[in-house]
Image (cartoon, rainbow, N blue to C red; front, top):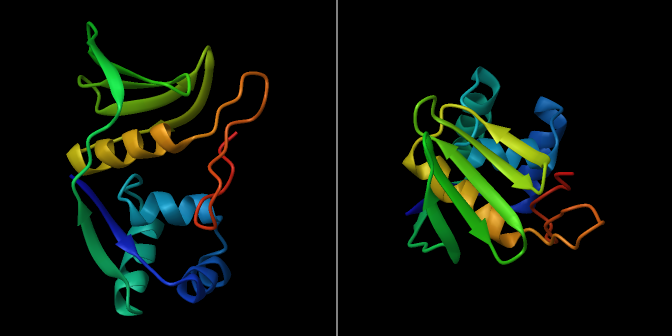
Length: 139
Protein backbone atom coordinates (compact mmCIF):
# COMPACT_ATOMS: atom_id res chain seq x y z
CA UNK A 1 0.00 0.00 0.00
CA UNK A 2 1.34 3.41 -1.02
CA UNK A 3 0.19 6.26 1.25
CA UNK A 4 0.79 9.98 0.74
CA UNK A 5 -0.83 13.39 1.12
CA UNK A 6 -2.14 14.83 -2.17
CA UNK A 7 -2.12 18.62 -2.53
CA UNK A 8 -2.93 21.20 -5.18
CA UNK A 9 -0.04 22.98 -6.97
CA UNK A 10 -0.98 26.26 -5.25
CA UNK A 11 -0.45 24.65 -1.82
CA UNK A 12 2.89 23.24 -3.01
CA UNK A 13 3.94 26.79 -3.95
CA UNK A 14 2.86 28.06 -0.53
CA UNK A 15 4.93 25.34 1.16
CA UNK A 16 8.00 26.26 -0.91
CA UNK A 17 7.65 29.93 0.14
CA UNK A 18 6.74 29.27 3.77
CA UNK A 19 9.33 26.58 4.55
CA UNK A 20 12.00 27.41 1.97
CA UNK A 21 12.33 23.80 0.79
CA UNK A 22 12.55 22.09 -2.60
CA UNK A 23 9.78 20.21 -4.40
CA UNK A 24 11.73 17.03 -3.71
CA UNK A 25 11.71 17.75 0.05
CA UNK A 26 7.98 18.41 -0.11
CA UNK A 27 7.40 15.09 -1.88
CA UNK A 28 9.52 13.26 0.71
CA UNK A 29 7.57 14.89 3.55
CA UNK A 30 4.15 14.21 1.99
CA UNK A 31 5.07 10.56 1.39
CA UNK A 32 6.35 10.11 4.95
CA UNK A 33 9.90 9.40 3.84
CA UNK A 34 11.43 11.94 6.22
CA UNK A 35 10.68 12.08 9.94
CA UNK A 36 11.91 15.53 10.96
CA UNK A 37 10.16 18.36 12.77
CA UNK A 38 9.98 20.36 9.54
CA UNK A 39 8.54 17.42 7.60
CA UNK A 40 5.84 17.03 10.23
CA UNK A 41 5.07 20.76 9.94
CA UNK A 42 4.80 20.40 6.15
CA UNK A 43 2.38 17.46 6.53
CA UNK A 44 0.25 19.39 9.05
CA UNK A 45 0.23 22.50 6.82
CA UNK A 46 -0.78 20.40 3.79
CA UNK A 47 -3.66 18.73 5.67
CA UNK A 48 -4.83 22.04 7.16
CA UNK A 49 -4.94 23.56 3.68
CA UNK A 50 -7.01 20.93 1.89
CA UNK A 51 -4.52 18.09 1.46
CA UNK A 52 -6.03 14.61 1.36
CA UNK A 53 -4.48 11.36 2.55
CA UNK A 54 -4.43 8.91 -0.37
CA UNK A 55 -3.89 5.15 -0.11
CA UNK A 56 -3.19 3.26 -3.32
CA UNK A 57 -2.62 -0.40 -3.98
CA UNK A 58 0.85 -0.77 -5.45
CA UNK A 59 2.81 -3.76 -6.70
CA UNK A 60 6.35 -2.89 -7.79
CA UNK A 61 7.59 -4.34 -11.09
CA UNK A 62 10.97 -5.54 -9.86
CA UNK A 63 12.97 -8.58 -8.95
CA UNK A 64 13.56 -9.06 -5.25
CA UNK A 65 16.51 -10.86 -3.69
CA UNK A 66 17.06 -11.45 0.03
CA UNK A 67 20.40 -10.12 1.25
CA UNK A 68 22.22 -10.75 4.51
CA UNK A 69 20.65 -7.62 6.05
CA UNK A 70 17.43 -7.16 4.09
CA UNK A 71 16.30 -6.94 0.46
CA UNK A 72 17.65 -5.80 -2.91
CA UNK A 73 14.99 -4.85 -5.44
CA UNK A 74 16.04 -4.23 -9.06
CA UNK A 75 13.90 -2.40 -11.60
CA UNK A 76 13.99 -2.47 -15.41
CA UNK A 77 15.41 1.09 -15.45
CA UNK A 78 18.60 -0.18 -13.78
CA UNK A 79 17.77 1.30 -10.38
CA UNK A 80 18.15 -0.86 -7.28
CA UNK A 81 16.55 -0.25 -3.90
CA UNK A 82 18.55 -1.70 -1.00
CA UNK A 83 16.47 -2.10 2.14
CA UNK A 84 18.40 -2.77 5.34
CA UNK A 85 16.02 -4.33 7.86
CA UNK A 86 18.58 -4.15 10.67
CA UNK A 87 18.85 -0.36 10.74
CA UNK A 88 15.60 0.56 8.89
CA UNK A 89 17.35 2.36 6.04
CA UNK A 90 16.86 2.29 2.29
CA UNK A 91 19.14 3.42 -0.52
CA UNK A 92 18.25 4.06 -4.15
CA UNK A 93 21.23 3.07 -6.29
CA UNK A 94 22.21 3.13 -9.95
CA UNK A 95 25.37 1.10 -10.30
CA UNK A 96 27.77 2.34 -7.61
CA UNK A 97 26.06 5.74 -7.40
CA UNK A 98 23.75 6.36 -4.44
CA UNK A 99 20.87 8.50 -5.70
CA UNK A 100 19.14 8.83 -2.36
CA UNK A 101 19.22 7.54 1.21
CA UNK A 102 16.35 7.24 3.69
CA UNK A 103 16.34 6.49 7.42
CA UNK A 104 13.59 5.23 9.74
CA UNK A 105 11.87 3.49 6.82
CA UNK A 106 8.49 2.01 7.69
CA UNK A 107 6.23 -0.08 5.41
CA UNK A 108 4.46 2.96 3.88
CA UNK A 109 7.72 4.79 3.23
CA UNK A 110 9.18 1.64 1.67
CA UNK A 111 6.27 1.43 -0.81
CA UNK A 112 6.77 5.09 -1.74
CA UNK A 113 10.53 4.56 -2.19
CA UNK A 114 9.86 1.61 -4.50
CA UNK A 115 7.34 3.64 -6.49
CA UNK A 116 9.84 6.48 -6.87
CA UNK A 117 12.61 4.12 -7.96
CA UNK A 118 10.38 2.46 -10.54
CA UNK A 119 9.34 5.83 -12.02
CA UNK A 120 12.87 7.20 -12.45
CA UNK A 121 14.13 7.77 -15.99
CA UNK A 122 17.69 6.43 -15.80
CA UNK A 123 19.48 6.47 -19.13
CA UNK A 124 23.06 5.21 -18.66
CA UNK A 125 25.48 8.15 -18.52
CA UNK A 126 22.67 10.66 -17.90
CA UNK A 127 21.23 12.03 -14.63
CA UNK A 128 18.25 10.17 -13.17
CA UNK A 129 15.09 12.21 -12.93
CA UNK A 130 11.34 11.89 -12.76
CA UNK A 131 9.45 13.97 -15.27
CA UNK A 132 6.42 15.52 -13.60
CA UNK A 133 5.53 18.77 -11.92
CA UNK A 134 5.59 17.26 -8.43
CA UNK A 135 9.15 15.93 -8.32
CA UNK A 136 12.54 17.53 -8.58
CA UNK A 137 15.69 16.02 -9.99
CA UNK A 138 17.31 13.56 -7.60
CA UNK A 139 20.75 13.38 -9.13
